[in-house]
Amino acid sequence: YTIRSVPTKPYDGQKTGTSGLRKKVKVFMQENYLANWIQALFNSLPSEDYVNGVLVLGGDGRYFNKEAAQIIIKIAAANGVAKIFVGQDGILSTPAVSAVIRKRKANGGFVMSASHNPGGPEYDWGIKFNYSSGQPAPESITDKIYGNTLSISEIKMATIPDIDLSRVGVTKFGNFIVEVVDPVGDYMELMESVFDFHLIRSLLSRSDFRFTFDAMHAVTGAYAKPIFVEKLGASMDSISNGVPLEDFGHGHPDPNLTYAKDLVDIMYGDNGPDFGAASDGDGDRNMILGRSFFVTPSDSVAIIAANAQEAIPYFYHGIKGLARSMPTSGALDRVAEKLKLPFFEVPTGWKFFGNLMDSEQLSICGEESFGTGSDHIREKDGIWAVLAWLSILAYRNKEKKQGERLVSVSDVVKEYWAAYGRNFFSRYDYEECESEGANKMVDYLRDLISNSKEGDKYGEYVLRFADDFSYQDPVDGSVVSKQGVRLVFADGSRIIFRLSGTGSAGATIRVYIEQFEPDVSRHDLDAQTALKPLIDLALSLSKLKDFTGREKPTVIT
Ligand code: VG1
Ligand code: CO
Image (cartoon, rainbow, N blue to C red):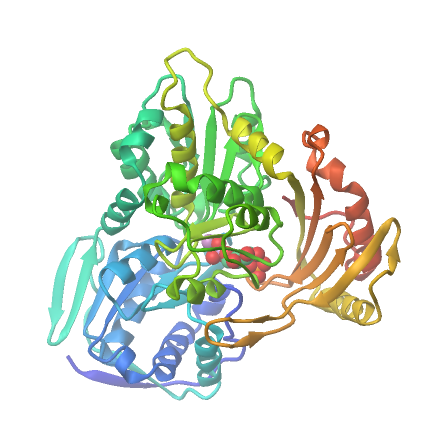
């Protein structure tokens, strides 16, 4: 084949956010828009990182992925990549891309996904780049890519035909090889090495334990049946919305109490199942529910960490360290303290965990945004989190005879609260606000905290400190600042404000509220009730209603 030089002009605004570049599909469909970014990426990497190298490509099955895959393959070939592994039909979840990169010792890989954002011609598309440890590219790389998008003038394209992605197999074009792989194989093998599948099977095949998984017509549809049903013995009808669709069946593939409403209704309905879970567009998020019971993600990661060494073979030999993102509740901190483990608090976004894992300081970590995972890969992992919970329940119930009452999800959580105390937590999201008002609010808050000092009174709450979170990576020394305005009070309660970095329209404001409660007699309170005074304080001190005109949040977690 030959290499064609395609002249092009730069586009503004190709800057990546918390997790990759996300825009409306229509933006990406403009001439050379995607191709510019991909070529800018190759222009940004040292040539030894891709020339004669191996890359991985997959995505969540959303609208425009098939066209995008062909563009990416042609540019990769023209830039000297030797081999590219592509998931069949372009499918690979985000955690699977990370797993395949690691297993096949690839130099990096692409995920074609806008994650939990809706898909279809009117909605979102996105692309993420991960490098050789399977970890999302750090800002040092994404900043360089952005710089190159502003001056790009040429795209290199190989003159090869479109690849048939529907069939597994190898196609060669001179020195360039495309291998279409089964999206599940490598990932399943990894899960079998992390968990005791025999133990999980003993739970899922019980007739007195009912399991349900909602794939939200997103990428875990491709994984749920082979793993939960075929390998682990769950019943055929336990998987709902199990076929990935280009528009997620008109859904918003975000596993939370608002967008996974069907699952929530089933779990809170009469005689609901014992365990329910859902995952997002690209399979890296998870929501865990018991019967009429929601496990807040900040508790979920703490509970997994507290039980991992007993229930999950991967951790039988110990846990290196624990970490959470800054807005995530302090539940995990208490587990780290009790288990005497190194502990880290990083900014929002999975890319900040990778260096700690690569340097063997971190095993289990999580974010309040339904992200949980470990150093088995370098991404958060929805199915891993479900398997971790099933392992804990299977371990706790393995001696239980048919007819005996099983230890439930809520039992596990309540026991945990009794032992460690409960960190009440809630997040309010105000999606698609006018950017101007949202930015003004953040400026106002920055101003407010710069004039605040220890001992200041906010109603009943006494300030310990307030800042705009910044972080220095302990491994490479890089510094990021302005990661969220936080007010921390004398009793440990926290109020945090951030603007989302994953939206594609307007500004999304996130308000995070947390309060610790040691008193067991108050643990059964509803989080919204327990946090009411602090939530009211957050809304009044930020003047959120005045700045945004919003009476109510779009999503409450
Ligand atoms: C959100 C979450 C963050 C998560 C990110 C990517 O970012 O808050 O915790 O890492 O999404 O998740 P933001 O900037 O919108 O708050 V996913 O599932 O989109 O890969
Ligand atoms: Co995601």
